[in-house]
Length: 142
Image 1 (cartoon, rainbow, N blue to C red):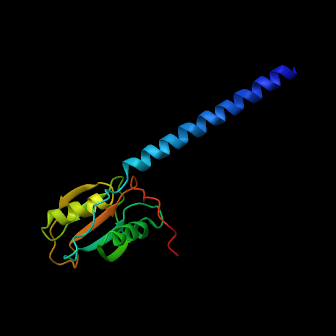
Image 2 (cartoon, rainbow, N blue to C red; image 1 turned 90 degrees about the horizontal axis):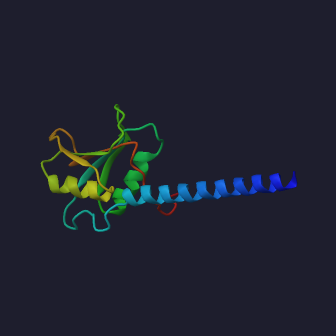
Image 3 (tube, rainbow, N blue to C red; image 1 turned 30 degrees about the vertical axis):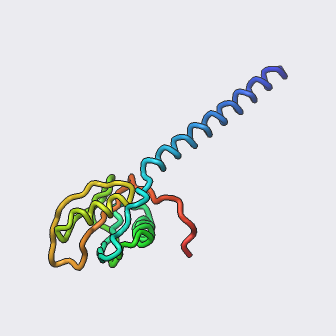
């Protein structure tokens, strides 16, 4: 009877260890896939106005995207929530500057870029953060 308990306990410990190893590798692989490109920053001599919209129900996602983009030198002038939900992140070029939209997409770790010019908006780029986007680990922003 005692031997059965020892074997059962060892099996549980082994299962927990295997699960923890799988979870840590899956999380590291996901974080590596969403890592921003290190040199993806705004040009030093250009002001790129960005609007960041949360296209999910995840609270605070637009705020995290704003912190990341501002750290990269982009001028985030608007933040909010999108009316439509999305799984993937989309960067919309509003001012016919596809290279600016590509820089923003690269700073976010990669995203689809679409041209949707709109001269009535006061922004050059609109970011729709989707459910699959995760912010990189950063220091605490109070």
